Length: 291
Image (cartoon, rainbow, N blue to C red; front, side, top):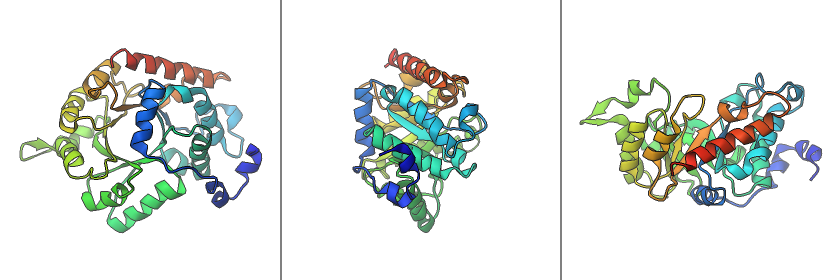
C-alpha cells in the first residue's frame, strides 16, 4: 500500500492489516540465531533530538524510527520503544505506526513496549488492552511490586512477553531492590518468584541492568536460561564484556541487550541512519566476542 494512503487510514483500519499472532519467546530465539545478534535497539526517540528535517513532518518520530529500523533490521534481535517519549509529545500515533511498520515489513522481529505497567487487577486489564490491542506490542515491561494479581492479566497473554523489573540499571536501584527479607534481597526474591511461581505460560523475562554485573550473575544462577532484558549498555556506562560473561545462558544467548541513545543518536547529520547502523554493528560484534 502507498505509504501516504496507509498513514491516512483510520487507525481502526490500519490495525486490520494485521499480523499473525507472534509468540514472543520463539521470535526472540529465532532472531538471536538468524541475525547472530543479542542487540535490541531502543527507540527512545525525542522530537527535540531528531534531525531537523523530520521535525515539521506530520509524524516525525515515526519517520525517524522508520529510517533507524530500515538501517538496522538485520543486526538486531528486537526493538524497544519507550512509551514516555511518545505520550509526552502526544505522539501515540507515531508509536502505533512504528510498531505496525516493523511488523509489516520485518515480520518476526519482536517489539517490546517499555511501559513498566502494573496496577490493581482491573487497571492492569486496561493496560493489557493498551499495550497489546492498541499498540500491538509483542512484549511489555511490568512492575512486580503490587504482586501477582497485578501481573496476572499480563501473564495470561500466553504468546506475549512479560518482562518483569528485577534489578534495574539506575544508580538508585539499591534503595529498594537491595532491601532484605529473610536474608534475601528483594531482587533475588523477584527472580525466584519469576522462575518458580509466575512463569506457568513460559512467557516471563526479567529486566537486569548491565550496570550491576555481579547481580546479573546472581540472577542468571537463580533463573537458569530464562531470557533477560539487559539495559544500561552505552550511555549508562555498562561494560559489555562483564554483562555478557555474567548474563549469557548456557548456549551463549539468553540476553536482549538494549542500547538506545548510543545507537539512535550516533550521528546527527544526514547520515544519521548509517551512523546508527555502524553503532549497532559495532555493539553486536563486541557482544559476540564474549558469547
